[in-house]
Length: 400
View 1 (cartoon, rainbow, N blue to C red):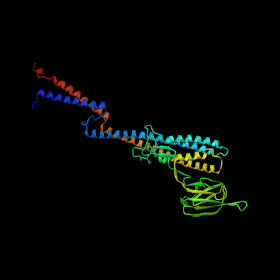
View 2: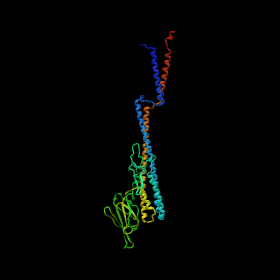
View 3: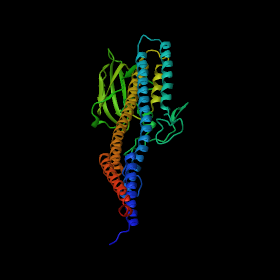
View 4: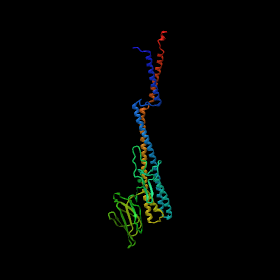
């Protein structure tokens, strides 16, 4: 087989050009640190890298949204903490108002301070996050979910709370559940003095002794005073007014002694008049603002007496229930923040995994790449040197 000199030169130049192109391509990949710069380099690797990058971008968007939700929920939690402290101040004022040495003017001054705290509490209920979204608007609401009317506070939002997902938490709490769902009385039943009572009778808020015996019915306690004997003898009757059934009959009354029946108990104090009554009804639902308003009314300018003692005792009980609701809501906010931290940690782990997948698909092994570059560079140099030697060969060098 004969090989022309021109043909040999062309083939050698083509090989050198190919080696030079490969060396330049490898140098480009080394400088970028990637083995896949374009889809034609490795279609499978490019597709894997693109999928991983898309998921990384999605995780970043989800984390930014979660960060905003965490900020809102953190603000809601701190606001509930402020509301809890404010309610504690109101309770302390109610306790202070129970001092028998205070005059009606002194209690009027305390009531004025309580009104100021009540207005501040209302401001907390309508507080917004940095984006102007109410923290306690429920599922949706206007800029101010709570409206203070002459008849009381009304919740204009939509009750309920959005459920979180695998990568998010709610950014607002249910204001209806937080501020508008406080049990009246002691949380199970209410104690109320008869409107026509003429004696000096009052009670504590009462308590539950045996939950299984509770009926949820209405009761009436009637006191009977026999003045024909000396000293007069006081007894009481208990009637279930829901079923019109006598429960206790002609029981001796002792000031400060428990009266117990059907799983509940309360302490009656003072000197009742003949025919004085107590009404016991199941607890209903009210709102925190109504509880505070009732406490203010119980304190405002009231003189010492059995009615004040009764109302003051009831106010303390209901304020405790309201504080329990706020504390429960604060605990819910804390759980949501804890859940957000877990989601954030899981998202970071996912990002690390996706970055590893992307790196395996497109990043270059620098040690291996440098070794390949040096090998190709050595081959390229050898090709140039041999070509230079062959190029100098000519028939004229031997016939001269």
